Image (cartoon, rainbow, N blue to C red):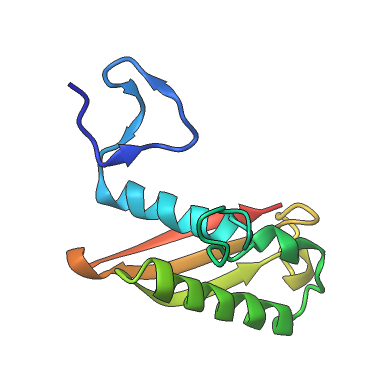
Length: 129
C-alpha cells in the first residue's frame, strides 16, 4: 500500500506507489508554497482569494516598488493559508537587477522560511517566467 503525505504535483507515475507521493514534509511545504505563489486569485473555484498570482507581475516594471507589492502579497497570503510558515526573507533577482545569467522576462524569487512545527529553516527558489 502506498504511503505518503500527499500526491506530488505534477502527477507522475511511480513504480513503487503507483502515483508519485510527497514523503517528506519539506517537499509538501515546498509544493504548497509554490502553488500559493503561482495560483492567481480567482483561479481556485471554492476560494477566490487564494493565491499571489505571480505571473501577473511578469509584465510590470522591474522596480523595487513592484517587488515591495509582491512581498506584501506573499506575506499576507502565507499568513492566511500557510500559517505554519514564518517567512524570514524574500529576495528577487532578474536581468534588470544586474543578473545577466537570468533569462529575459524571468524573475527569480528566493524565499527563506521557518517551518514552525518542525522548527526547521528552509528555502525555496521559484523562477517566474
